Length: 191
Image (tube, rainbow, N blue to C red; front, side):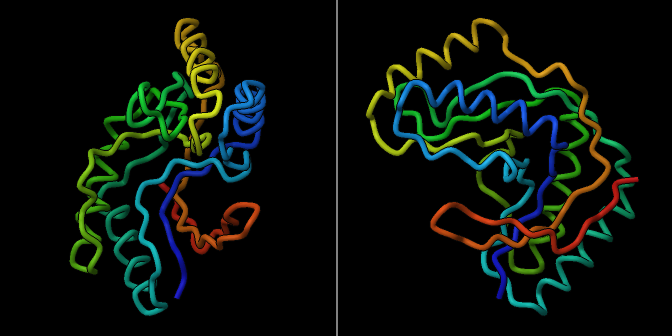
């Protein structure tokens, strides 16, 4: 059994800039468990614990969708900062994306549909492409954090660098006390 998810990895220079953002937000001393910068990614589908034989079926399903769809390069920029579910009771701090979001949503939907026959039901919530930066653990200094997030939103915060995504990755996630460790199991080129 392996804990698996399908995701888009980000270039190191983008992760560095997101790390700087996290460090600035952390100055609020709000009770947040920050995602390790090297682990920041865009999740396409979380599978949970998957037996080895089913992993092989997942890989085949992904390859079939990509062969049929031929998505090509995906281009994005990191833009916007927000929280889920809402600013009154925030639980997750995220950075948003702009760019090939329609193309990405179509690819994600076709992948979701391909996983249904393998016993992985379609996600009930709408696909909202985002990069999780941290999880708020308690109300301590939450109002200070939300004021800082609001400042970033007013400034229309973004990372100006273009991101070109050439592949999606099936990752294995191993949980550790200091945070999850993600290991690529298989890379799937988009071109």
